[in-house]
Length: 100
Image (cartoon, rainbow, N blue to C red; front, top):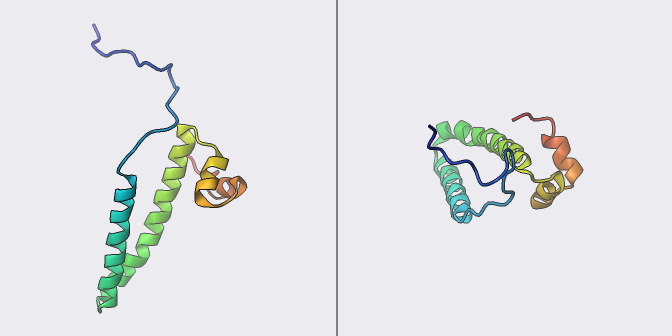
């Protein structure tokens, strides 16, 4: 006998909007860390320059993963584009070919 309760929403249906209160603080923390890394390089740590530049590709990958996740969660290209300050067509062209 299974002790797992059936979900309250139909199979495959997900809630579109999720409240996450720590996003602003988390994003602020990430910005501070990246800026601190830049200051460290600026004080003469030339070896860390390559690592700092490599962060840009990590950030691009993270944005792609986030967009794919938002699409799977039910957000439209128009909603995603508006948050990024670009058109829905531009968002779809940039990330539409990605597979989760």
